[in-house]
Image (tube, rainbow, N blue to C red; front, side, top):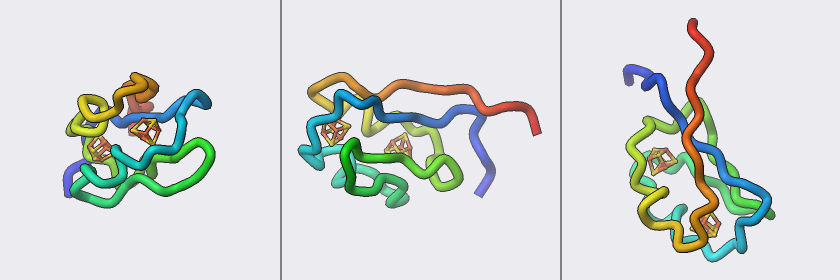
Amino acid sequence: MKRSKRFYVISEKCVGCGACKTICKVHAISKGNPYTINENKCTGCGLCVTRCWRDVITVKQRAAD
Ligand code: SF4
Ligand code: SF4
């Protein structure tokens, strides 16, 4: 899969509800405290951001390859 220039990260304020993990189609999100996003799997689709009711998921730009 072509890598997006963007990926997402979850901050320490994550409350572990699991909503983002459920919605991620490529299974890039892992359970934890906080939950974490695998940069290499994340396609940058942004779905988890719209799902997170705590608003703790933010976009990052990848370094140029
Ligand atoms: S939806 Fe938000 S608060 Fe819930 S587990 Fe995901 S990042 Fe954490
Ligand atoms: S941006 Fe999309 S691919 Fe990346 S973790 Fe969120 S739902 Fe998954």
